[in-house]
Image 1 (tube, rainbow, N blue to C red):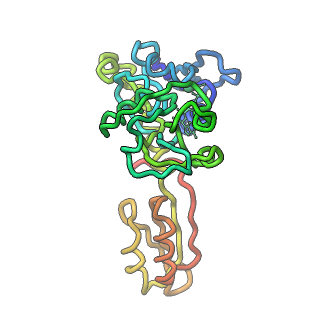
Image 2 (cartoon, protein in one colour):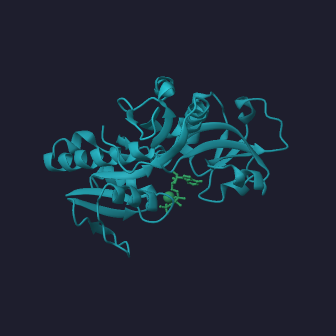
Image 3 (cartoon, helix red, strand yellow):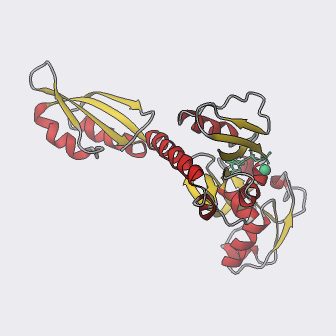
Length: 286
Ligand code: ATP
Ligand code: ZN
């Protein structure tokens, strides 16, 4: 039985469960007791506070865990990242009152910075040869400058709106974080059954993730333009081209990377493509 620690409730919980559900793993546990077993896969879920997940995996209470890289780095446990999961994206940034003139990282020399992430901050300051004092607080970091307990803050930022509403401006990014699956590879390799389950799970998670990063595109094009159209679409292997009932027209099907979809569509459109359909892909196995 492979034990997976996930966040009990918070920003990563729903997304972690969603990913497992899309990988076909059924966990019936509406009241989220501490442990829940999957009905169709040799997996048990442990619901924990995210801060406790790295230690649990390190101590072997769980075999793998889903946690933000920020929490992993802050707790300092040496674990292997088995898979990057593509959700829970955020950055850890330094911010100062917006009225301050910022002239580079040396601004922080001799200043006081409030944060809940003293380790990540100290590592970043050391790397940049900045000497500042760190004021460790566990919450409401964003109000620290307003109430006069610090000159600056170091905190998680996603949209930046919390900073703005507290009269702050983001001046430097120390870390880009996302949810990762962590484990102790050397330990897992000694347990063939667990590693087999993990590999099976990874295969499914990767299929779901690849699907999320791609779109299935279908379009109609005059036969004379098909060659040019194919040249702008980076297909999975090669695009499918099917003749249409209407003479001189073809239908082209392919898989496109989500991030480039609009640029490619613009090009396809200008090459005479019509009836362009873009559809989500649930799973993708190459
Ligand atoms: P717990 O009760 O489990 O200790 P928490 O309050 O410490 O939860 P959450 O706020 O649920 O943690 O955030 C969990 C993780 O989500 C963060 O550590 C970070 O990796 C990620 N995350 C993504 N976007 C944000 C954001 N805007 N603010 C905070 N965390 C974010
Ligand atoms: Zn936490």
